[in-house]
Image 1 (cartoon, rainbow, N blue to C red):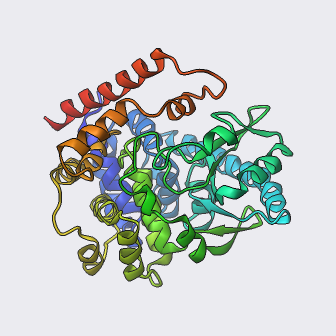
Image 2: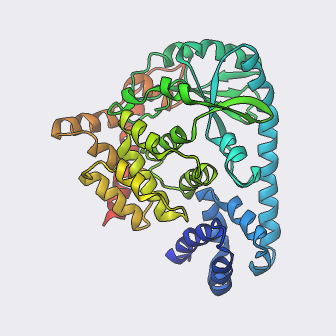
Length: 399
């Protein structure tokens, strides 16, 4: 049975392989530990962590494939090139959609996914792309829907009319799927904060207009798009990774940030990161996120930047979350400690927990992809079961 040795190996080897001078240490680690490790588990776990393609790419770049067990290099190569084909197909599907949005003068910002794979990762095949997230203006959502329907996409989790009525600090997006079920799906946002767990503590301060004002022109999928400026991308990725349904549970969330920092390290304005993170009331999330990135990767964060982002006093929940992360205990749901800490006072904490267990009906319907259905008691029972199961897992892992 695999032990924590395998999990520790994954963390260490990916950090070494992504360092420009990491060849010698990576070669030594694979040579010394490789034969004693469960490689079937390592491949499954690296895939779950989202870093399997990075592993293959860098092992190949460093000419270390011969150190792997027989047959493993060929299997990893096949997996890598299958992912590269998927990403190329996704880009081909998205190119005319982006062109149509541009032709109709519907502005959009491409978030994460393909934008990261093309613009900051070392190769298009090194990052998996499941769906495509775009940010649009709230008032353009019906025009976006009209455009996407021309490409056989339709919203599956709700309707434009119902979703626009969602309360602030909850879901602010629609999932568009192709009628034939083919990929990629399109996840259309009109606000950067998008979660079924209440984020009203900061969602109202996370100003989309400021993101639009500083967005940059780029070329992705051979089409003209806009992307977040590097400073806002750092803020957004930290907030995204700390949502309770992520909680920095996978290495891919750290490495998205690492490659953004690598790509923009010389020009990134840390003063803007600190200023706008404070303006959006997420400075603590950015501080925690960058601290986690520094712990798990080869990326050093300037001490002055961390000082500027430091909230002054870490709340108990934030300390607990950091202790879990620095103790290499990463699991979905642990971000609830951070969210609880952002709700000051016993009453506000109780309100947050109540809204976590019992979100507004339209949020729960959308979360369950029951756009045409009616709220049922079973939905809330399942929600309670889901939250309780997370709490039990957290209890086991924090002992």
